[in-house]
Length: 272
Ligand SMILES: C[S@@+](CC[C@H](N)C(=O)[O-])C[C@H]1O[C@@H](n2cnc3c(N)ncnc32)[C@H](O)[C@@H]1O
Image 1: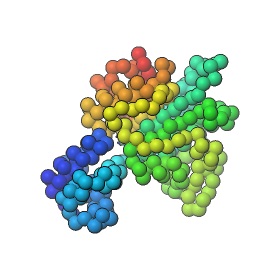
Image 2: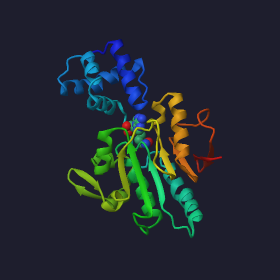
Image 3: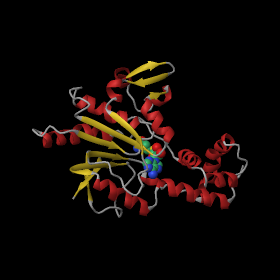
């Protein structure tokens, strides 16, 4: 079923106001593809009916946003941020912490189905050689998509998913086979806590983090929303905190509180 332009505009307003995701006219095919199955589930016969119902049902609005998110991800995506973590950020953090014995707090703030979170956990496990407890290292993992966060927290992946970015050594060391899936081991699962969170909600009060991964999500937002997002994330960083964004993303012309530091073929941001 083709979506009429008026319905597309109304859906774009709904999705934007609940997630910040910008849907342009050229995304009609995507909306049709992703929302028609939802219309069938709710026994609705037109996009107008979907919009009318969404106006009175926050549950349906949540489902619409969920379907319109793009949860594309993979283990060790872009590789370099994880090398940076192991070879620069963790040694720096440890050097700053000597004697203080405080907790290392990491936030994966648009974690999709969890591959980024477990890639961070594997990196930590290998860096500290398993020599830490869940009291000393915490990974907060959040996403706006209910279905993505449920999957992330289960830590259950298909053959195809583990074939994207995981070495055989990592697969055999950190996953157990639960046919037809692979399940992340408890020692890694217990390092992370998962929560649904809209990054564009008016206030993010999450405490302070040493390292924030915010990769491949701001690309879906308007410039004004990106500015607001990175201002909020900057406030969530510890004094020596570090922000990692996606390989194709930049804070140029978006945020002036954070400075870019180039390192090992990638970059991170920290307070000026
Ligand atoms: C392409 S995935 C990126 C996943 C991972 N960070 C990576 O780079 O592989 C983008 C994620 O951002 C999430 N997202 C979109 N809008 C969001 C918002 N307003 N707040 C939190 N998460 C959001 C989507 O649900 C999706 O899972």
